[in-house]
Length: 270
Image (cartoon, rainbow, N blue to C red; front, top):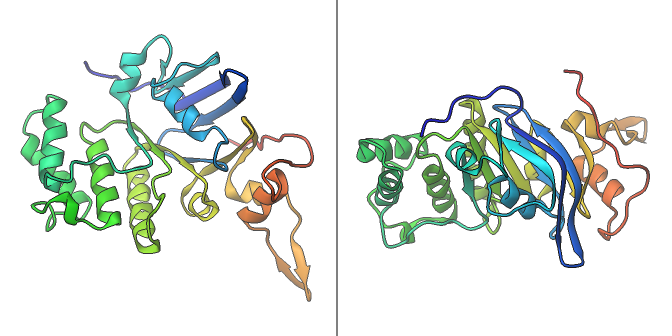
């Protein structure tokens, strides 16, 4: 099936709700993601980030609200949504017995694509893994393993990719490798929805950042817009701009159970 390019935002979420018995995980979530951009859903563990991604990738049904991906409704057009996306979870889903190239060829064959070998070679080159392509994935470093995992998710060129906490457990060098990979995805026109609990990751990568706290989006804007929510601190007459960490802790609270002021959505000037 061929998925045609849709108009409007790559992802649109309105009033999304999800509960597990008495536990309300999502309590009316709203956001949009522009095409070809990196959107970071930032929040602590248990904030509802993974639940939102599972709903958007058709792995879970929402209790209320609507969501569309690449112009297709996740509830009524799940097959079209699946053709338009790829999902990379928190841990690399690669076969360690196979080589990097064999993993890519396997995915290409499962997608019934022609010339899977060429597809694998192109992706290995794109992710600077050509020299390691013939080695078993079990010999890869953490960063290499994550990069081959993301490469596997790009087989078939999906226009939208979900990265659910992609750098969890990685060392600093491996994190930087993954960050560069994510930037290159957006540069090539892929829409990236990134969930993370790392403030520096959102600050480094995202065009827009939404903070998800206790099942709700409490702020949504560019990094510059979020920083404007707090006044700059003046120390010895030197103006210090607030960091994303300052914004996050002020809105969410250091203990993760409170924030002051009304929920806010920072609008763009687009």
